[in-house]
Length: 278
Image (cartoon, rainbow, N blue to C red):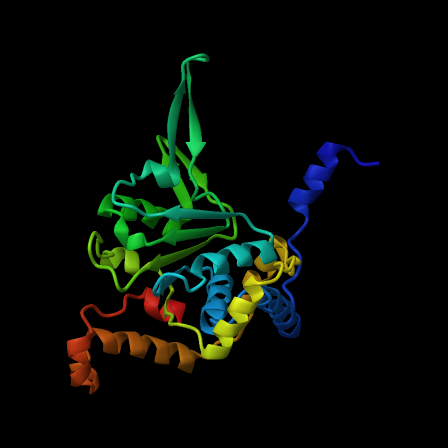
């Protein structure tokens, strides 16, 4: 019988499990989508893009009016994948420590303790992100890009996997702060969602009249990490890479690439993160 030390040593030295084959990955993702759709009716584009961002280790910005299941989607995804979930309601009086945490003095012990904030989770919903001032928005930048938080002189990594799904309301401009370009650039995808179709809304109402189904965990966090590693085994032809770079370059100089009429619609061209995300 191996000791605890031997067990830890074996866990450290053992290589991670091999990534699943494309067929296995597709089957696992379909199982996850099936479970999520038992709760979420419609919004297929949003559901698929949440999984795309998870696999590509990116973040998602969703724009839509209230009541379109944005919170329920990320919470259900966390349940199906067995991850932790946090929701932050962004408001004008929010301060950075409300997100990342702070140092707290314990007078009884005469020491400072670190209390980690709600960003330390697998799935973070940043609700109405454009309602918080710039200093709070910038506090989210390090977490999204570096996947770590610095409190005092200590750096704390966030759990892996880590997904930020931020929402903003397009119909309310009063009391909002436009997202800076540096923060918008951190999001891999932006999804604009609308109202459900008649049949979808009928299903939504009918589901509220009965007991909600008990979700089954379709994937573990370890499975999701294996799927993320499998992404790097997907062959990408150099011609496709060149095409992605050409698209990004065209957004910076539409006139020089034969589409001058688009210049009026593009304020800033895509950064190198654009073709990387593509």
